[in-house]
Length: 293
Image 1 (cartoon, rainbow, N blue to C red):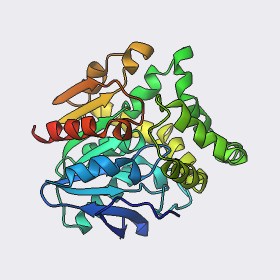
Image 2 (image 1 turned 90 degrees about the horizontal axis):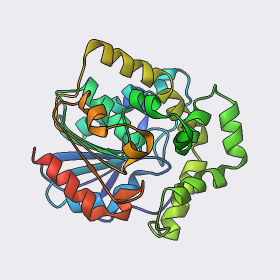
Image 3 (image 1 turned 120 degrees about the vertical axis):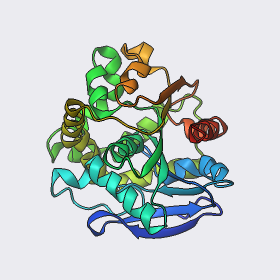
């Protein structure tokens, strides 16, 4: 699909759950850190940050199932793209590279996978870093009023299988480009080549991307609600960095995340959604600060 890679990283296809093969880049030595990308992107969003961290850590950056050059299985059941399944992919891949304990840093969709990995595998995940997202259950709770229009795509892709895929396919290039435009305040975060990669990779993955989002409005939400009812929390250090969505949507991020993670820190950043590429030095610092806890 692309010749773009993270310089100096080794690439492998490694097997996750149910035989699904994941595209994985890895480099470095030291305590392991797994980086998970957001929408509409691939593992390449972490190029600068991962390269920085690989100087003193074992770093893995992977395409989530359904994205980039990883397999895109048909969503035969809701579990296929549940965050539980995607988190299990991460655990399987890390184990194949010899890591039975590791930190997870996730942006957007990848952060939801990181949270589920922490809830389901507390003995495996040592730290969780969150970029610009709320937990699944809380996301739906705070989306109200006209300010929630920023998340219109969540509602589109939550609809039953069939119509959302057809609607997006009809204008796929414009659909995915619109997010790169709207969420990049400077308009200069991506090179033309990288921007084209993100658009083409997403256009080739419409059914699986929709299935990922649909799970967030169904099976993932059910899992979050069940965990909340049972009082389950993230037992490892957790840190979040994001735009100041709280002031726009009327919530306190420390309160929201604190209900899930007693050992939690939060900081706002003056950057757009694609902060790992807009300000990689700051995000690398954020990760390193988390890993010292």
